[in-house]
Image 1: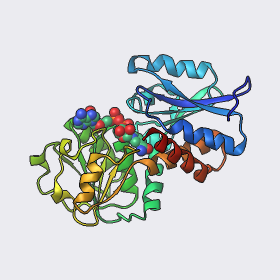
Image 2 (image 1 turned 60 degrees about the horizontal axis):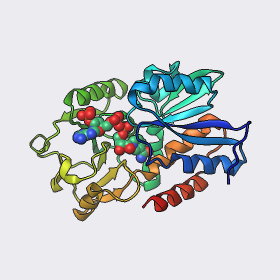
Image 3 (image 1 turned 90 degrees about the vertical axis):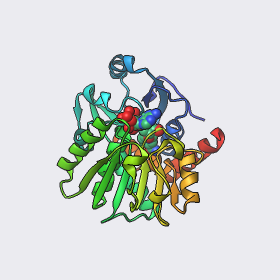
Image 4 (image 1 turned 180 degrees about the vertical axis):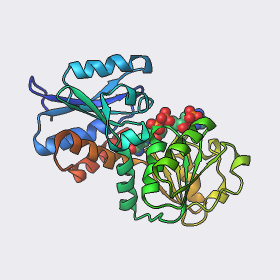
Length: 284
Ligand code: NAP
């Protein structure tokens, strides 16, 4: 059991609906592993309260915090500065408090790459489809570009946001071909041939996504960033012959990188993975 006392250092996750979050289980297990008197809390805040919440966490001396849906983009304008991938993407999932200064990072990019390596997926030289253009999609698109893909297809409900993401990627990774497809089945016709299709939206069912079986040749990977029970999207893709994975691996690795930023210690990934699996089976 964890004990909270007057000396406990605080971290947590800022999100709107975070009833589903599994991050406290992973981070608190990691703190326990090192015997650190630190705690990780769920921090619920609606979009209109985000600015006040960030100033509140600064005033309360939080050591850092994660940021999740729907705040990852807006928070980039509320911290004092952005580092590395957060600056490149304008999306933040981790904030580190450094002597009262709030620094925004993005660990989703390298978290997704670590997850692909663990799966043994080699996408170098292939085409990849990214569905979505929000904070997670931006991170996934940059991650796959760094893996050396030849082409990225960006598909999003709001086409302006897809175009915005494509423009940012063209600047960051000029050698990768980037194209934008419309979010309807007609627009997607003939888009097959991707080695990896990543669902970066909260839509869980294949029927709600602009995809059909032509997008899943045998051996295509279908990844859904949602975690927990396999989504309808993953189940259908598997029935069409795709290899599938949920978002747990990315969740684990981005958390490990956040832990390292806050504590300077190597993340105890196996303890964090076990805590994540326990939390998933308890919520199933
Ligand atoms: P976000 O910034 O709010 O972006 C949401 C994206 O989903 C946007 O592209 C949005 O399209 C699209 N979308 C939302 N509702 C839709 C609908 N009804 N129809 C069509 N498109 C819709 O959120 P995010 O932070 O990127 O998160 C996206 C998902 O990834 C969430 O399910 C989140 O839990 C998951 N995630 C998982 C991990 C992990 O570690 N496994 C990490 C990050 C996120 P518009 O632009 O048209 O609004």
